[in-house]
Length: 149
Image: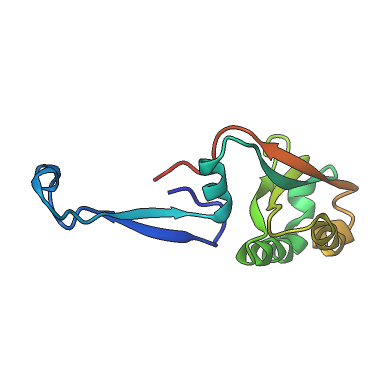
């Protein structure tokens, strides 16, 4: 299963409860296709064209791990709301050193202006923990965000 956001499309795959041999000998096999993916994943799998996202890039202040604590939950709540709306696809901070973050947004559901508006009210930005940020187009040309499971 490839999960990019909470928006999903589902289909079912079965052979009417029959094994492969009985399917091959059956005169009336039934086929239902099971697939769980987001609209972006469907577009990616059906086309060799790159998939466009928006990347919100943050640069953090020194000591971010300690300084972010009073604002972290509100920051995460804002990102979760964007994910629940099918806008935020994936995001997180760089780990070692923790000097910035990247958040990917689905360009089919989100505008650059919406991302800028989000950043302008993000508690990390408002409380001067992000001295600089930018929004750029990001073209995914290979791979997937989460392997099938």
